[in-house]
Length: 396
Image 1 (cartoon, rainbow, N blue to C red):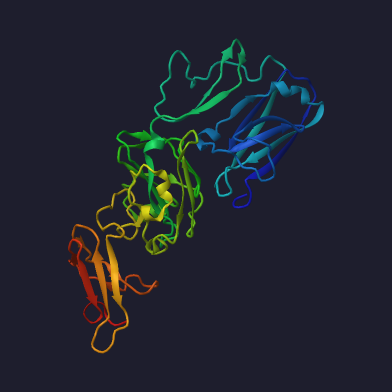
Image 2: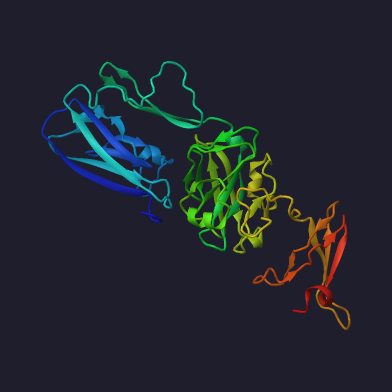
């Protein structure tokens, strides 16, 4: 199914020779399904509408929840059972073609007693005796026991904390030199700790956050390959986990949602924004993570290359180099005659001095580090600097 289709069909034949009073579907699933008995729909999860051959789940089903059997009372459909041969069919649904895992494990329990699976309360259940405090966004499942009869399972996701307001994407390493070195960095721009449980990427990559506490101004990364990332970067970087899929080197849409599906960020990045970030080893870094306009994440002028090759996951590298446009190429003499040398004029467009020592000039896309500007070179406030061919950057 990977990279081909989000749908699979499962058919399970079974035979009965008695009448039953109750019917329960027990199922583990990742990410969604529609279940049928003898062609009649009896249950569904994480899907709306009419299913077709390439339908996909409407949302993720967390691995920690997916591996636990969910019991669904389908006693109302026991009349569609027939003596002899029957078919249980599952239309299995994955959330995307690049999602790396899939799970369906199902059993059908029929009972001639009052209710299939009736019994005591699980020792792990939390009895409702008053208000229940949720410390982070949570998928809550509940049912009621009345005598020997359980109610149908009810579930809902509750979002806790200002996650959508304060979580922002701050760095994207989409085309690293090491093909396994991708990562996305996120920052809590708020003044209080937030928990990222159930926050998820739904476009660009596939990842749902576990219960991760992110302090005010804290940073966390999701990575393509944990081993490759740890081999290259500081092991103290806060890693939330390893995502499925791969960022497109040519640019693509990235969408981030909170636990209840509220959009946090939804934007497209492009490989043409900064040449240094497109295979040259630098990451795409947001200039102002506190910008209240979330639409600005989709604009070229909101981004810059990282200060260092390899990016700066888990760190703030702002202020190390001037912002884009602070120092510009103002004038070029490219074809001089006689004794006159070619030259390039740089202009500091800001009101403060800028240190450009260690910067590079190049006329080649294949070698962006062709001519290094001498360490300690500065351009004064609103000043100019001439670099000459014969004195500074050679004759090639």
